[in-house]
Image 1: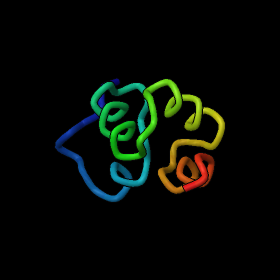
Image 2 (image 1 turned 90 degrees about the horizontal axis):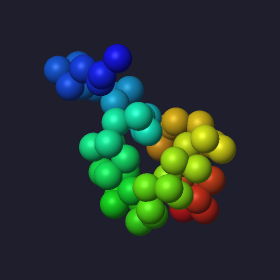
Image 3 (image 1 turned 180 degrees about the vertical axis):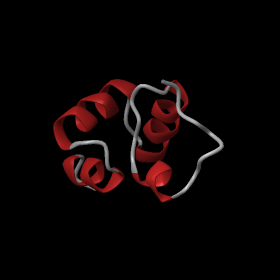
Image 4 (image 1 turned 45 degrees about the vertical axis):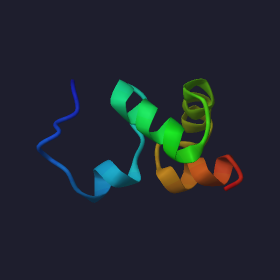
Length: 58
């Protein structure tokens, strides 16, 4: 199921959906990592931005 862009709020800003290309592009740029590194970090740490940042040492 595609992400419903009309429903925005804290969950959309706090989580990274690696199944949505626009989110992968945004978070890769925001965190300064490649899309591949981002996907690996989400798989290892979970989908929350805080967990991914910790995993990446930020």
